[in-house]
View 1 (cartoon, rainbow, N blue to C red):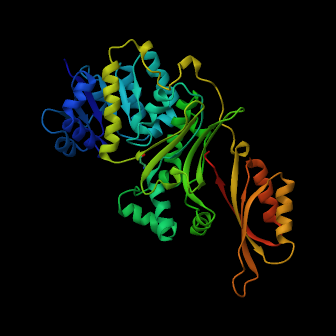
View 2: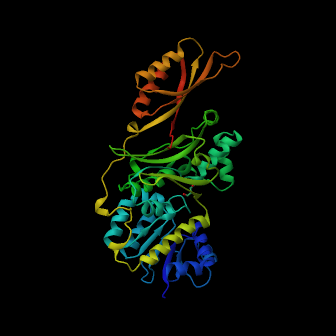
View 3: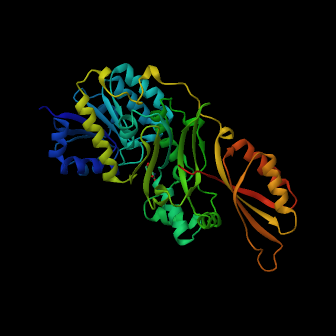
Length: 436
Ligand code: HSE
C-alpha cells in the first residue's frame, strides 16, 4: 500500500529517536499501521545534523514553512518546541489540511483551544501523546481506555528533572542547589532549568491532562504553579520521619464548583506506589469512578521513549487518515460541542491537608496559642511533633500535619501564627495529599 508521508520539523533528540525506532521496527509498525510510514522531509536549522540523522533519500531543508506547505506531506510532526514559530507552523499545517503530531506541551497548554478548534474545522487530527509523560501512553489511557469513567482526580509525577532532584536531596541529604548542578551535568536539567524547577513544565502537562480528563478547555493561565526551588532538606527529612515523601505533583481534581489544577511540592504517604517513583521516572495516578485507582509508570523523557509516543500517534493518524472526521476520537476526548466551560478554582478554594513547620520559643503556652488559632480557623490537627530544643537554645521547631481544610482557612491561620511574638520567621507550609 502507498506509504504515508511525514514531514518532520526539528531533528533534536526526539527526532533522532523517531528515525531510529521507525527504522528498527519498520516491519512491526507497518503491520500495525496497514501501510508504511516514511519521513520524507525534514526541516531543521542545522542542515548538517539533519542530513546525518535522516540519512539518504530524505529531503532536507532549513525552511519549515516549505514542509508544512508541501502537497506530498500527509502528516507534520512538530518537534521544535515553544509557542512562537511552532504555533505558526502548526496552524499553517492545519490550514493546509495536514494532520499534526506534536510533543509540544507548552504550545498545547497555552494555545491548545485555538489549535484544536482550527483542526476541528479543517477535519484534521492533532495528536499529542508525546506531550505528556514522554513514553507513557497516558493520553491514550485518559482519552480512550478510561472513557467509561467519570474521572475524579489525577495526580502525576510528570517532570523527571525535579523528581531526580528530589530523590537525590532525600537519598544524599544534599541541598537543592547542589543537586541541580548534578542534574545539569547529567543532562537531565536544561542549561536554563526554569520551566522544570519552577513547575511550569509540569503545569503544562497537568493542564493538558485536566482538559481531556474532565472535558474542559485548556486553562494553563489559571493553574496554580509552585516549583521546588524553596524546598528545604529539613522538610524532606521531617516528612520522611512522619512516613511521607515529598514529590512535585501535578494535580487535577473535579469539584462541584470547578476544577482544581495545581502543581506544587506535595507530601505523599511513603507507602503509596507513586511515592516510590524515583529518579527521572514519571508516573500518573488516575482515579475513575468505575475503575478505581490506576497507575501509569515509565520514562517521561529521552530519545526513544518519546519517539515511542510520537510513532504511536503516527500509527493512529495513519489508521484513521481516511476515516470520516466524525468517526475519529475527539481531540480532547469529549465531543467539541460537549466541552464544559468549568473554571479552574483559585488556590484559596482548594481543599487539601498541610504540613506546617514553625520556629517557636520553647516556653509554656506556645503550643496552646498555636492550636487555638488552628481550632478558631476550623483546622484539625492530625499529627504533631515538637523537637527537644538543642542544648543552650531557647527555640525549637514544631511540625504539624493537618486534616483537610480549604486553603483560605490555612492562609488565615498561618498569618495569625506568624504574627505571634513567640513565633520566629515564616511558617513553612507544604500541601499534603493522601491519594486514596
Ligand atoms: N523536561 C522534562 C522533564 C521532559 O524533566 O521531565 C520533557 O517534558
